[in-house]
Image 1 (cartoon, one colour):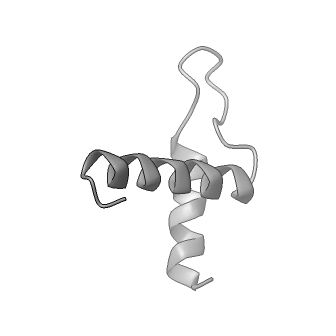
Image 2 (cartoon, rainbow, N blue to C red):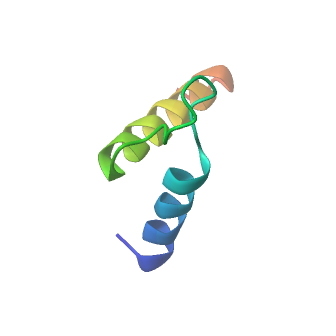
Length: 50
């Protein structure tokens, strides 16, 4: 993983907060990666790439 990717992951972890609790939405790097993969997959399905 590149340093740019790590920086982006940290930024996502720090900035995205739950609207209900106000706490961080992603507790760790794995949660950010899982969310990113799911989002990319959904976008690709919507664009009929997959």
